[in-house]
Amino acid sequence: MFDQGLNARDMVNRGIGIEVDRDETDGSFTGRDIAKGLQLVMVEKELGEELRCTGQEYKRIFGDEEMNQRCVTRFLEYLSNNT
Image (cartoon, rainbow, N blue to C red; front, side):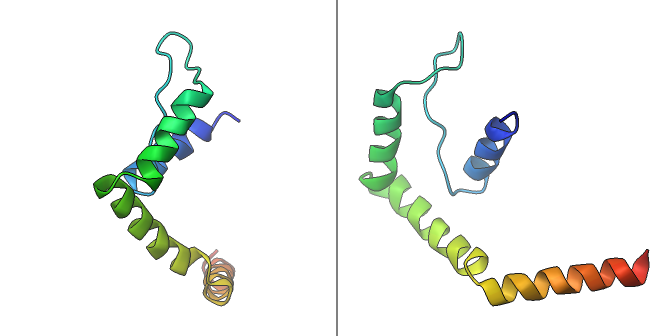
């Protein structure tokens, strides 16, 4: 719960998300704010296209279970051999 804001900002910085407009006094947002963000990503030509392309690149990497398993195995081997 407490890291959601940090994760969201990280996704924005990586070019795979946008930040939803929020009320500056309490950080809340409305359904209209969500709809505005969705429209920006799904309909807006320039920014939306860029986000979708970047998202597809990440999907190829993180959606490859075999590659992810190899990375985890190598990481565990590294830890085992170097600690």
